[in-house]
Length: 204
Image 1 (cartoon, rainbow, N blue to C red):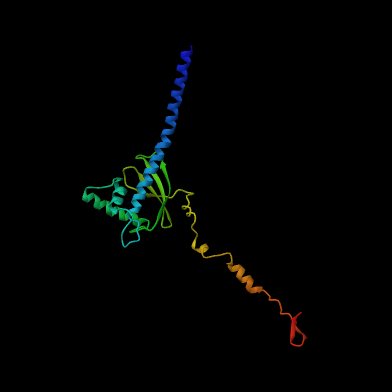
Image 2: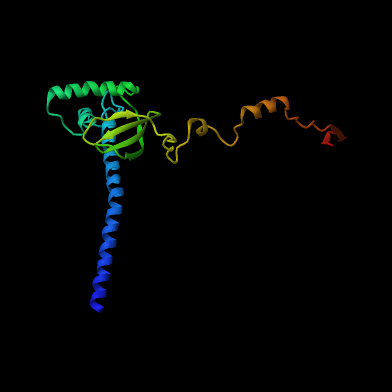
């Protein structure tokens, strides 16, 4: 009887463990897909992100073309690579991010359920423009609509906008300045001076 209880106990543990594995499998897989898609988009964008030195880019432009077109780092067929390069240029021109971008930030990445091949919707902020891309595994990246409710990436802490960085505690708004003109501050009248003695003067 005691041995039977032990077998039942371990059986329940194994069952619960398997159930937990099944329940966690999908979230873990989705997380891995999201990370993979973000890394792919990051490498693509760096391929035509200006480094600030002449016409040089932060990443590798050819790698960006290959990752964008076929999700691989190198297309060995010259003809296919040439077509991919032309399509890549057209794709960038559609959103006005050709030939170079200055800055970008990945805002969100979320797998789209029920689509084959496995596809992740990646939202990116590029030079102040919010854009969304469909990133199918092993296939070409395409544009999509930005999800409703998506906002721009938060401004990094420690940075101030140009309008506030130059202001100080003594600055006034336009309304306050206009009120000052209408109601100028009155300076107190000087006190009369009277003579109290030879060569001696005092204020009242």
